Amino acid sequence: MPKTQSPKVLTKKHLARVERERIQNRNILIVSFSVLAIVVLLIGYGILDQLVLQGLQPVAKVGNQTITTHDFQIMVKYQRVQLISQYNNMSQLASLFGSDPNNSSYFQSQLSQISSELNDPTTMGQNVLTSMIDDLLIRQEAKKRGITVTDAEVEKGLQEAFGYYANGTPTPTVTPTEPATETLSPTQLALVTITPTPTTAPTDTPAPTPTSNATPTPTSAPVTPTVTPTSAPSATPTPYTLQGYQNRVKTAEDSLKSIGFTDADLRNIIKAQLYRQKLQDALTKDLKPQEEMVWARDILVANEATAKTVETRLKNGEDFAKVAKEMSTDTNTKDKGGDLGWFARGDMVKAFSDVAFSLKIGEISQPVKTTNGYDIIQVLGHEVRNLTSTQFATLKNKTFSDWLTAAEKSTTVVRYDTVWQSRVPTQPLFTPPASTTGQ
Image (cartoon, rainbow, N blue to C red; front, side):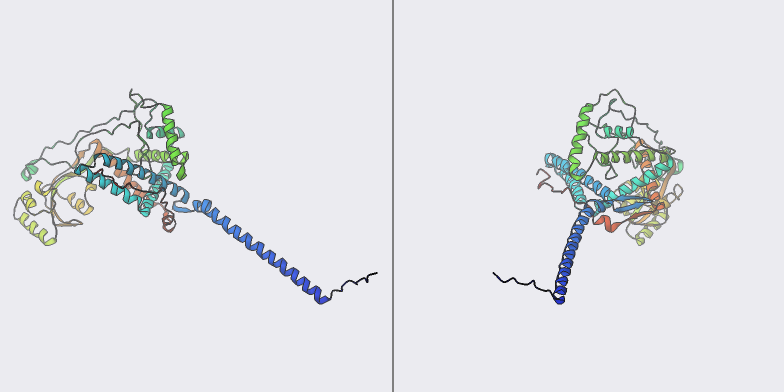
């Protein structure tokens, strides 16, 4: 019968070692799981940061409202799509008509300008951000004034942006203004015998009616499509049906899905344009189609010594027009005796305008230093003149632009440059065709 072994007796020393090993193994497992958890959390946070958190971070703040990274990047991508489309359309025109040297230089200039903007993310980002800041300033002022934009107005604006008019294509109504007559006073007749050339042709050319193939395109605000102002519709039938319009909107939206652009983004652009137009109308409602203007002639020279020589000759009684033809470096006006025509204050640099508007008719200024050199100015007329519809529209735009500049100065506007500059999208990529002139 085999001999039975007695169980091994563990000593206290052995038990202590076993316990230490158990604790070490447990600690190793805890550390391993902790490290794994931290790695998973970091990866998850990185994904969350890229997909969500960065998009919520502000790139600018206007008063108490922010512009988020997500909204900024969407608008930059949208602007890139618009510019690439413009480039491709211009390239097609260049291939058809670029063989003419006169046309070629124009097409190349346009293509170069578009290409330059697409290849300069910082400039594009800055332009888009400025436009978005302007939109917030406009909405804040609109809220103060009780100006609103309804969903129905947005829908109508969207339809018009795509060239669809449910009640027929509107016919623009132009309200002409009577141009000022050029009746010269005895003082003016003693100075000149020519009729002044207006700085802007006095024509009232209505804006072209949108065609059926119109698509949302940027206006001066880089990410805002054109919205045609409402006017009384004519009997002209709509160029295509409601279904055709809806199909075109869907096609446009589908083409923009790749950049994350949604129907809400498109409608927000339309709404921003409507707010802009309504506020501009409110700010300019009291403007009259008239403006203080000066008719002047000018002799431009490169340095002060030459300006003094010209001044002395004029004081000695030499004819201003003859001296201008001989001495002026302004190739646009010297052959006309330096005649600048009629101009408003904002048409010339401030130093020039300040002097011109302070002179009496017939008076000749001392040399005026400007960025172009030294000017000797003679005023030939000074009056409040009627504006053409084109000039009046320009005055309204300038008034609104001046308001925007003042609004930004009076509002706390913060641009987070290090944030937005590092997050300007370069998608969709721009790959210009090898040839754009058709030569």
